Amino acid sequence: MTEGAGINTYFIGDACLCWQLGDRIDRLTSLRVLWAYRRLRRDPELRRLGVRDVVPSYTALAAHAQPLCDWEAVRAAVDACLAGAPSDEAALAVQGARRYALPVVYNGEDLARVAELAGLSAEEVVKRHTAPEYLVAMIGFRPHFPYLLGLDKGLVAPRLDSPRLAVPAGAVGVAGEQTGIYPETSPGGWNILGMTRPELLYDIEPGDTVVFERAG
Image (cartoon, rainbow, N blue to C red; front, top):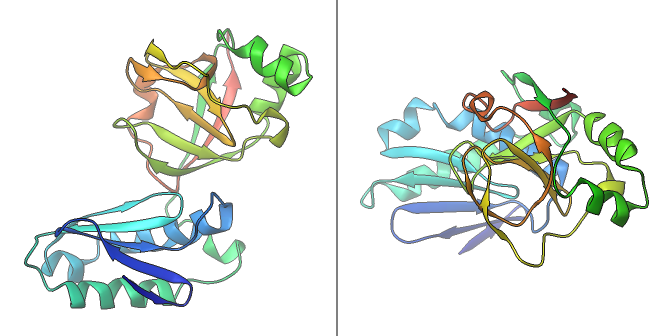
């Protein structure tokens, strides 16, 4: 592991090098990660060096490459990009980001639970959940599963004590400070607020934004 300018660099196996920019979920950190991700994912120099993919998470950026690539050159290219990232949020605006409006039927089986935990009515939960414009910080867990930042702090709720074995495709849920959408039927422990159309998730990428619109 190497460190510099508050960034830790480490390998996961012999084909993935990671840059850790922070240690907690934070909008500014996510914007720094996404700023670099958008510039590096199609960088011809990284492709020439053998980098096959660049993947963002909340606090880190990972470069996946051939094990025998020139890792020092890859490290230098990514370090240079990160060093050029601006420090203020406005300047970190994600270039080429798209905005997606997703219709949601708020009939989720955990809507009442979230309302009770928040000390709000179910109607107020829906109003607060549809108010923000959410940042897609990363895609993970399942293909096309977006992790969204921007949840109203009054709606923060812990995961279910016992995860469900089958959450339906299109379920919109909250867990902690996050909102997420299940693109396919799968196990999960998030609090389900409602349902949207899962096919609307297929084009969403890290750095895009999402708004929820009440439907039905």
